[in-house]
Length: 466
Image (tube, rainbow, N blue to C red; front, side, top):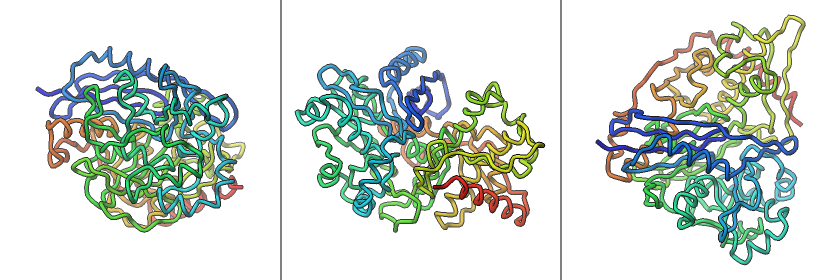
């Protein structure tokens, strides 16, 4: 019997899962790692801690798999010394806003970056993070020019460690999130590198998402593209929404690059043969993280799952806009900050908890509205989808059914699918048969109520924008 191992390195922790040839979970181990906040709006991780946690979990699962797949938080940026393998600074996390001023200075180039990369000029992406590290770590820029430094997103960092420094590689889904990768030609772009003052020598080799990466790794994709693959969305027009730390809606658009849509990104996803295909993406920065904030900062719940019990039947006019690190799609407002509006003396923990959950669904509707497509159903995955209250409200506020699979960790499953296809354990046509549906949530809210609630959300969002 075949065994496939998936390493899912997320924003708050690592999960290592062993799947069998029927895509069933055999063993799983997970562990959180530290979130570092040096200044307001800054977010960092210790790359060495991420590796230590990953190594520990691999030992706990203790398998000799036929193939390994890696999926990862995408834009998080690591720069390390090629000779020692040591990072020259903490990793700058995708949520970090420290390069917002740099992005403003680069705004004159936004049309060029948009045309070549499909991205907007925002601190979210890796390119300005690399430039910041080279500018602020003493001697880093000279070392980079001399070819002594390496850059990678977390997939590249893990591959470097797994192979003992032999593989400095990534895949197109991660490369396409750097502001340096031309998605029209599928290659690093010299002009963009020059604008951001980033030496080509620091960048990893790009291999197809299904390929031989070393150390038994046969598949690599950024977390959202892995989830798209894990949901079996391999055809043009199929879409999914992942509810993790952030919230990410991706729609596969096939081999032809779609026309740009205001407030949304064009990115690369994975086709049935592992080739790069195009996708439209709406990226919401704070989704499940708002529940973690209620748990860790306000301490009104002990564990994240408590929110469903605590949440009131109605928010009673309270709206929670969780713009802790600005607003992502479709607003792309780096200066926005979070707010809770509509407070009265009658509001307590339960209403705030309800408003926090509703904010996740409202933000998803914002993205769907920007896509300007009618969706008969929304495939969902991610840890927050176990919350029935949230899923029902999502169906209600969209006015469409929401389909939840039995295995909501589609990111890990997608990594396993990539590796399994790469190893010949499965073909792409096998994948939909391996995905089981847990529950379908049908909309039960009348149109007038739905539109009234959404209008209140839009008004609340405008209050936090600068």
